[in-house]
Image 1 (cartoon, rainbow, N blue to C red):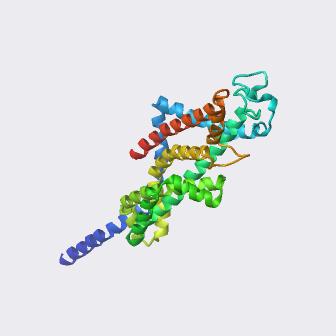
Image 2 (cartoon, helix red, strand yellow):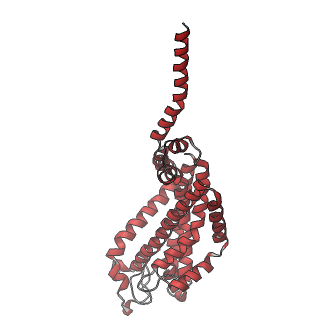
Image 3 (cartoon, one colour):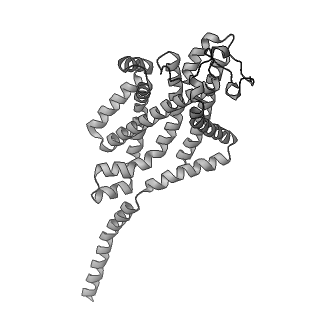
Amino acid sequence: MTLLNNDQENVENDSAEEAPRLSLRAAARSGPEPLRAADGLWRKVGHLLRRDVLGIAATTYLVLLLLTTVVGSFVLADSARNTNLHLRFVPPLSTQYGWEYVLGSDALGRSFLAQLTVAARTTLLISIGAVIAAAVVGALIGTVVGYARGRLDKVAMRIADVMLAFPSLLLALIVLYTLGAGLGSLILVLALARIAMYTRVARAETLAVRERVFIRASRAFGAGSLRIVCTQILPVIANPLVALATLEFALVMLAESALSFLGLGVHEPDVTWGGLIAEGRNYLQHAWWIALLPGLAITLTAIATNVLAELVRKAAESE
């Protein structure tokens, strides 16, 4: 009887010791809690959209804007470049010169519909490029320093504080003066101005995630820091970063338009909405549409993006 009792106790002890290992192994393999979070975000955004009329209108506008920009910028590319001084300042809704002049013409007789469409392509390309670049670099830096902690974390946060305190317009002047105005320079300067924001958000989210069970399980089974950061942490913290990027798009677009209006943006043959406003301010009395229409496009795009960003934020917070 004594031997049987001892054997039973040994079996129970072995089972008790093995249970945490099995639990850790299951957590490490089930892992990607990460992937479930990423999938759920867009399902929740779609669910919120079905109950939000303003959200549906904003999403419809943005989809139409993208389709018009992609298709129209190729169809109307020649009309945006061809000048005809006999058709200077044709007013909007004029049908006698063809559908291309439905929004009038500019000081060189170019179709303003074509100008507006091509400008939309450049503005969106710069804004999307700057947001993606800032989000990727900022997320990587914030995740690494948040996971590593220590002196690297302190140095990165002090640099982020300096970047956030540094006037973005002055930074733009320095970079654009050094590199010269252009598409790449604008994307670079706008991305540099926003990297610190993504870094701080990614770091905060990483600090909240780094001690979860599946992270500790991965460490216990020998996963390297780089693998944990790339496959375990980044997918989990992606949702708040996506919400931030959606909101930042409108701010970056407005910043780009301001720089273009001041003459620090792209130059001919490229054109942006901000550049069209700068051109149209000289003709406000007799060609008001040159400044009004791109300004209206910027306003509607910013409002639609902010409405969509609010829905993404709500969906991310409910994860």
